[in-house]
Image (tube, rainbow, N blue to C red):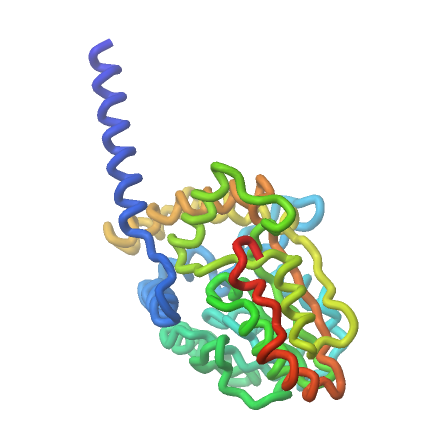
Length: 336
């Protein structure tokens, strides 16, 4: 009995210590530099690439979800997003801006399998360097450091603007929406996939959802999550969209990714050993956040949103008059 009690005390002590370290070493959003530094670190040590492959985003498992290889599901996601966005019928040479390209996994598929001319941008210099190393020279795919909140490209530069899971890092969702559409040519297509929070205007966060959401923000340098409804409204409010913004909820299709990512550490233990003690601690430290993500998406606190919009013809004058003064400030409201 005393042995059992001692074991329980030791377990609780270790659990308390681990939880304290987890909370004290959070990486809350401070600026674009803090986001860049986080991704530089992950890219330089190679841990994230080892487990998540070239695609630092969730996978597509179908509806209803089917068991799939973790890395293959990520590539499948890109093809499904191309199909959903109506991009498969576009000709070779179509110019694409991949906003938040990571180490270029999606950009390479768009260039290799669809013949698109892709420019990938990320705020992380290390990601740009690694993306270049992984990209065959015969592909018309290039990468550069750029800030999605103030893109360096002129208006109407690209036929397609594409972004996967970059939005949560953006401190002002209205500015992000405007920039995505600003660099899109009239008649061009915007396709975005993002982690989203439930719309708090419809159902406010309850007692347990608030601290969970705060950890999801603080642990991975996110200033805020938009809601699917809120971000689609921000896109429409730019005055640059022709017709309606199309949205979809892919929570079901992507949900298995979270537990699959934890499972990778079990079925591929080589990674935990290869990166030394520091790498092992760094990898294990992310497990609670991944599990919180699974909880949030599974319980309806978070949703995986898909967005498609077409840049309107002759909308430049509308944008010039409306975006500076008339954009509703949804980005400052919790849950939008």
